[in-house]
Image (cartoon, rainbow, N blue to C red; front, side, top):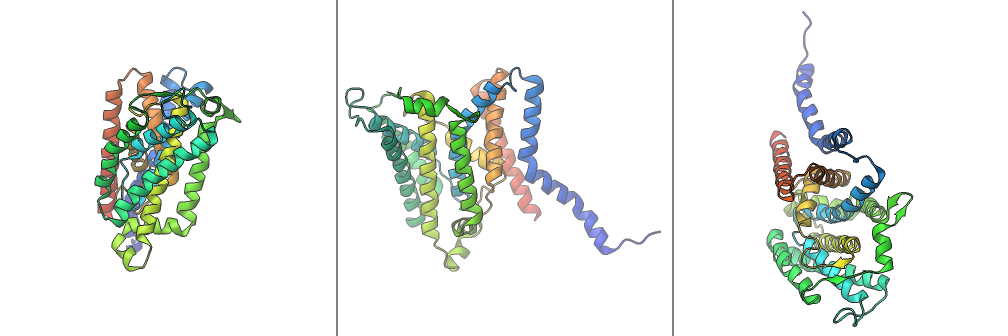
Amino acid sequence: MTAVTPGEVTSRIRAPRITADWVRDKGVYIALVLLIVFNVLFTPHFNEFSNVQLIMRQVAAVLIVSLGMLMVIGTGGIDLSVGATMAIAGSVLGLAVSDGAAVSGGLGLDLTLSIILAILAGLLVGLFNGFVVGVLGVQPLVATLSLLVAGRGLALVLTSGGLVQLFIPGLNKLSVNNLWGLPYVIVIALVLVAIVAVLVRRTTFGYRLVAIGGNRRASVLAGLPVRRTIITVYALSGALAAIAGIIATARTHAADPSYLGLGYELNAITAVVVGGSALAGGKVRVLGTVAGAVLMQVLTSTLAAHNYKDSQTEIVQAAIIIAAVYIQRSSRSSE
């Protein structure tokens, strides 16, 4: 009979756990592949290039918002105001680019300048959130929840409660034109993914972000600029939400403060959590977030193609969030 060494016993005991960790880490990619295979086999016209382009256009804004949410959640915070920030950016864009004859209070500015003003508006919203959370010490959930309500109200005030139609050639190109077969909006999203990935993985700012999310008190004691980092993270989230708002406005050819960005905070949180980032902070996965955003968009398209209602889709999203958080909790408890 062959003797078994203590090392072999330990290895055999740990083998199932390693396999479970691997499945947990790669689960979003496995689920995405399985969902795509299901659609190719059972969903009519799914693999047509026009449908793939449509999905890319739909996922672009969600993905950009999710990048900002990822960094906020990485610090142990949360930003519920991203949808309202999108609405504010859309309203600012509509007022800036429209003239006084088309919209009351319209400025008639150049499209490029109007886009810059819209992004600055989102940046200011993010700076406000960062100040309230990082300096005043208000809980992120409370601070951003207030802007979830007040922000959309501000967007309605800017447009006098109405919808601003925007049939502008430049915006139309942004929503329908392609570059090497890829929609402009997904190219913009992928560029932002690369920037955030470098920012998180290759810069001191990224290391501080993760450290603060892992243990904020220890980060303070270590002399890290906690407040400045938190303010920067929320500012970036606001700016990214504004870019997503511009893209969503271009797709609909209108700045509609009542509906623009509605529910995007849920979509972004879902993409981040499903992508493997820890909701409690300290663990940031950029590629996982990309896969999570694509997974949720493909799932939404799949359910719509098979005649499921929007309410049923939202129930599925909620169930996926609960499952992802439970898996994360199980992972931490086993460590």
